Length: 294
Ligand SMILES: NC(=O)c1ccc[n+]([C@@H]2O[C@H](COP(=O)([O-])OP(=O)(O)OC[C@H]3O[C@@H](n4cnc5c(N)ncnc54)[C@H](OP(=O)(O)O)[C@@H]3O)[C@@H](O)[C@H]2O)c1
Image (cartoon, rainbow, N blue to C red; front, side, top):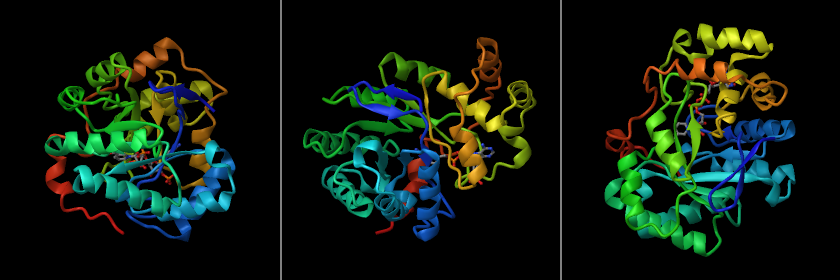
């Protein structure tokens, strides 16, 4: 397993299991727990959920059932737009912990920037961090301007920014800005497949791009493994979602090959600024209508 050290010294496994829409959006049942237990049996220890994914209870049940020591796990959750603000963030965090049956989180993220609430939300998160209820605080979908706003008052530096990132949308200026400020990049929809939020058709996916397929053929691995390794070798965190045993297993098998500089560059060159998911410039307008289940 590959790890990177976050700016507060906490280590995070570079590969995690994305948890949005396992089964279907906000499905929170035995099926979801079984998928997680399958992932655990393959070696996954890092799980990326969010209150709005509506499957924290299924994750909590699976973690309990696995019997794994808590310190072997890395669990991330996120505060949704409608949960932001000081008291609301404290409440949202407490509800996430209760649903997950955990005493603490490894990482808590602001799911999307809502600039009017960022200060209150972050200060609440800082209090949770000081109380040792969470080991690291981070951001998601933050633009450069949002990070600059945060920097004017934050006492705890965010450890990461989780953003949409795949070969067709590399967001290089934002990545460079974050990495310069020691904010690690975590890639959502790393395969550019978007299970929950996008109607992207099969032939539009980076997984079938001729450049990726050619590199995959040369290394005798699948295209998904090439895309994930392209991120891992560039010190980024990846959280592919998979519920098929074959994809889950392949996504975990990344250590028996390495990409050359020229292969990495040729994948970088596939960027066409093609955003598949929500845009932080507008997303909040629709997010306020999305309910976080109890
Ligand atoms: N912070 C945010 O705002 C935000 C937004 C969106 C997503 N996320 C996070 O990012 C995670 C991943 O995003 P995503 O699910 O939208 O996109 P993704 O991981 O790029 O794509 C998932 C899709 O790819 C398939 N797949 C997985 N491994 C594969 C492989 N090796 N070869 C071919 N297909 C493969 C999966 O199918 P099977 O299930 O059949 O294997 C699934 O349909 C989410 O679960 C969530 O944790 C965060």
